Length: 118
Image (cartoon, rainbow, N blue to C red; front, top):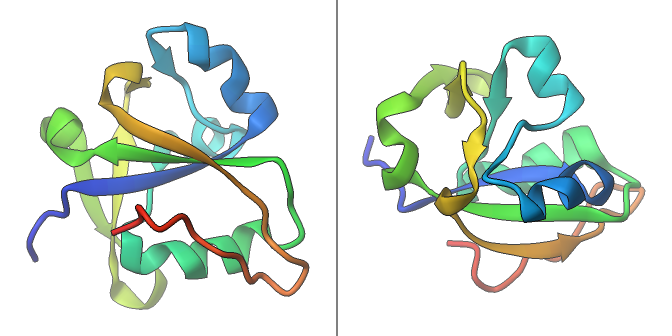
């Protein structure tokens, strides 16, 4: 598997707003409960949104430079055996966020991803 340039973190606007003026983002409540921060690759993103964020508005999509956190990423098998990136034991450094975009997911789980998702 080749490592993608970007991976993606989905957050609620409410959870991410305080991090905009901080050095890092601690993640969502599910990240704290699971003990690691969940990310998706571009190929995994639509299915993650459909399964876990259907019907939610006021989301923020964070594009994260993989190279900035590569030493701390663990790629683990999940849905269908696909390898998902997880960040253990540390918050996401704000400096690793390449860009952010607002996102809403329809009740059926569909959404339009920003053109920059690659």
